[in-house]
Length: 219
Image (tube, rainbow, N blue to C red; front, side):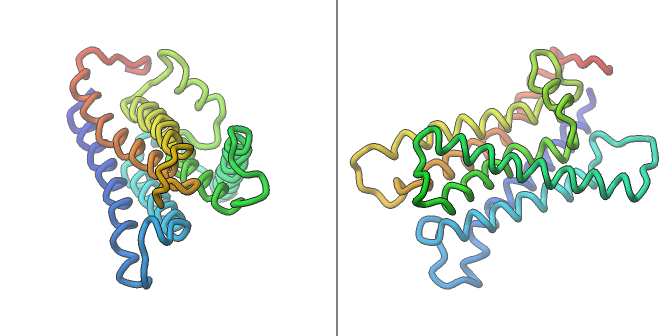
């Protein structure tokens, strides 16, 4: 494991964090009365687009899983379409899970779906960028001792931290505090965002700290 690889990982994560910061402040210059709470759905859309764009560009530039084989245009188009389908499936699966866990079935459908979109952005998009539409690779990475690179280690950490942040974000909803951020699904989306950012910040530091103990099958 080289320090340059860890630096590349760190810079990529810093760009992702920066994209979330931009989604908070930049829209206020163009949209009147923009704020995370008052125009929450708008912010979810902007944040999702920015984070997705930064992930795509970063992985295309860094190419952590670059293949030596040249792919045809038809293969690339098919792969892209599969990734889009996987992302949409992820959104619908998360939406169903949220409803099963108590989200409104009929009311606030758009809010619940956009919550599913932002969580898919934090979890599914990095999986698609790094591993592609390959379920076997996904299962390998999230199984015990299945990672083969620091990028996959980081993917584990950021994905888990996003889910943990979402889980903690749900705790304030039933409390009788009558705060605006307790409206569904604001606290959950903020929890997911904080968890994702925490994972992005922690994973390179954790990998650097444990670099001597980490071994990978392909090394």
